[in-house]
Amino acid sequence: MKLDRLLAITMILINQRRVQAQELADMFDVSVRTIYRDIDSLNLAGIPIVTYQGQNGGIGLIDGFRMDKNLLTRDEIGAITTALKSVSTSYRDAHVTSVLEKIKGISNGQQPPETIFIDFSPWGGSPVLIEKVTMLKKAIESNVCVQFFYSNSSGKESNREVEPHTIVLKGQSWYLYAFCLQKEQFRLFKIARMKELNVLKKKFVRKEIQIDDSPWDKEWYHPERTTELTLSFNSSDLALMEEMFGVENVIKGEKDQLLVTIDMPEDEGMYRFLFSLMDRIEVMKPEHVRRKLKNLLQKMNDLYKEKG
Image 1 (cartoon, rainbow, N blue to C red):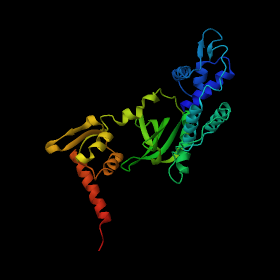
Image 2: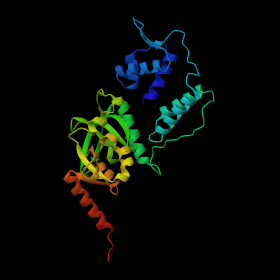
Image 3: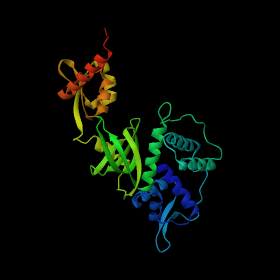
Image 4: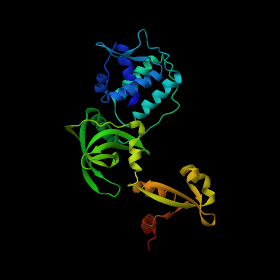
């Protein structure tokens, strides 16, 4: 977690005169390049960190600098506290508790009241999901492979061994972004679909990925995975459709028909999304999606048909 790492680097530099970039990279299991990006972020935040050359060189705070307890404003402390407490609803991490205690120590009791609390856990709690996320986080930190049985959106199950890189919360669901050894490429795995998750002793060398660029989005919308949908809707829903799909994607068809064309990954999630709008939209293209929706609607009709 970047925020946790930034705070930890700051505390290390306060307590140590100099530290090597490679030492920090090994400590936090990231690349040296990532450490230098962190240093840039801290400099922008007002913490003067410089790089010293020579035999006793390294990264350190500028001579004479002392951490000002008022470096963070009351509202900034509140924002950090909200973020950390929210993340802690999804997995167990002693580092989060430690950082919260450090923040309390530099806030001089001036923390604002908690007006927002974001709970990422499902209703009723989910100890199984929390356990999986916690296991995967530890595997990522230790650079060890994990193995699990995975069911895709069609219900087909396969045995996977992967190199875990990042846990992702996307669309209210938790995913693992990992390099799949069977497919020899990065894949996004929905954690709820994992069965018999095991952390292995097999080590791997972490690959360089740019998390800030959300690489899973680029792969998710790769042309090979997506389908172009043409949807028709009534003018009474124009504002809703423009907000949902973007004004530039809405066009006028024949006889004042309103259309929107979008690309979506064709999977179970796409059909769930279309069903959520079935009283407002009609899928015009492609034909195979129309057929599948008709079949699904017929099954639903049969399920709720009165018997007798």
